[in-house]
Length: 623
Ligand code: AHR
Image 1 (cartoon, rainbow, N blue to C red):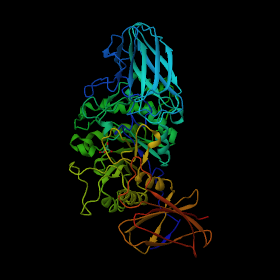
Image 2 (image 1 turned 60 degrees about the vertical axis):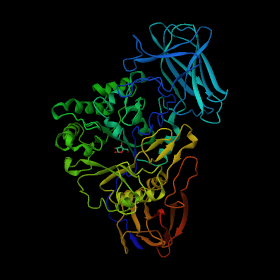
Image 3 (image 1 turned 90 degrees about the vertical axis):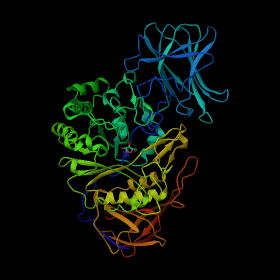
Image 4 (image 1 turned 30 degrees about the horizontal axis):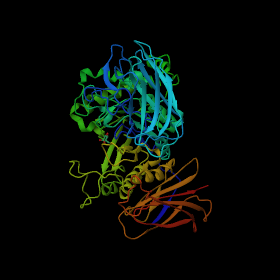
């Protein structure tokens, strides 16, 4: 293929081209990136998920009973555990964490709240669940007072445990007074040492993707299944004692310890743009707020925006400051709802989107407002839309041109995409959503190549595509609802599995440019798909290509206008895997091979070949 690339003209491309989509699915929040180590720390319950003692268990003959005490820890956390042990015995309760504890030689900070007249010693330990090893144990005197909840803090400095089969134990002396316990919490060091923060390994993995945005907090988990179950920003802020939690959409309760402020700090820590999803008045099950009753929900969204962005002279800006955050954050993108095209009978196009849109537009003219329909007819003039795409690799490979003729007045966020099923016998066969055909357990390489063709098509249309984010982002290997996922993990941060798609996105996302470079080629796209860009700041050319469905290598001869000399050099990075079905799986080594080559132009032309399923990026300078 002979290709000529120019740095003259070409549309400016979106600076947000690759990002992260996050919702609490697959225990990606509680039990995942939210670093809290104690599972069911505050016995939070709801009609859908009633309060439970699980997975706590008693030490010895201790009696543990859930109680709704007349003096609750807070109205948000009314249920606590009453613990009774016989006089002269050591009582206690233990927690297995989120399917184990990684115990390393580092500082763990913990706390718990106690109610009653207990006057003895508390012993807090991290222990092996199978041997007699105690990794560390600390004793503190009770500060309990009758009729009052009192917080107790402690730290543990354990020696490292050889595996995650460990348990956290809180012990007390039987017969030394009454005792109720609540909000029993333990954190390891967090990313950037934030209190109530995030797992460093998973955050480092995200940073490694060089992302530009975080779309949060969902996904279906924003919506809630039915009345009372939606995500509410005002219940996710402030001290943990004030967060009631909610029934998540994905089969487990959410603590909301990972709340609005934590999402914004996450954006700060990765220096990325928040794309804030607001609840649009419709539940996942289809229940919707009628037009006449929607006003208060629009107001709630406006209050959320004021909480985030308002000066401390505003009601909600002052609330933010009172929680310790006087400086506002900036929101430039708001998405109204999630996949509301799946519930179009609830009036998204006719009133719901419009009501949120008009209120936001009037108060914040510069916010880019994104509809969640993917359907341009339902959205207001100049607003954007979010298009979700779960496909087979072959279908993605056929969608290189999907956005070439998109309406240029409506920017498009590709807020969720992933190759979810293996290729079918017929090349054009779409995803089977009936459940008869399972989704892939882990992303595979042919899927990553298909996704790359799709996202190169998006890059080529970077004047109208805002950016793209693979979904879901995380999977706790011990409890999950959706595969495939970008990053899989368990309690041990040394065992994170970064998928084949992760490495493909990492390569593409690490090479950005300011403008799409005009290009001519003497061969049509397919089996090779490619895009070129130039960066006005760094004066780099970037050429990205992948090859799908060919037995013969594809030769490229590329000339770039304006190179320093006809013998300029370029760096070519090529990813591939042993075969298309190769996946990164728990315990396995990374199947993605990465080769880097230094090329010298011959008479201003760079020549190289790419094989089937290569994903390649070439960079060179034009001055
Ligand atoms: O990514 C998993 C789910 O897929 C999201 O929650 C939803 O938006 C989509 O249907």
